[in-house]
Image (tube, rainbow, N blue to C red; front, top):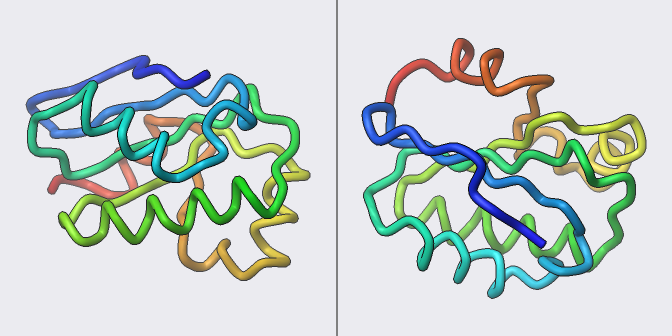
Length: 115
């Protein structure tokens, strides 16, 4: 299951909590969720992976497709609260250099600045 846990219209971002990677393993469902739930113009989407303990190639593919789709609209995708297993998986796949991850939303906002 995925849900928007925070939105900030002023700074044009949303935080999406991923509670179960199996429910959003397909990029189309994740992108549809973002488009349907938040129709405003965005600068950033933060995927909070705090509750995700494991990912596999299907979820990695969903992340890549979402990254590319959001990038077409000039929206940046960031990961929050990535555990050690997920971080190692991102490193092995080379996604660590493409998808920036942060320990917290506040750290991310300080790092990326404004749109």
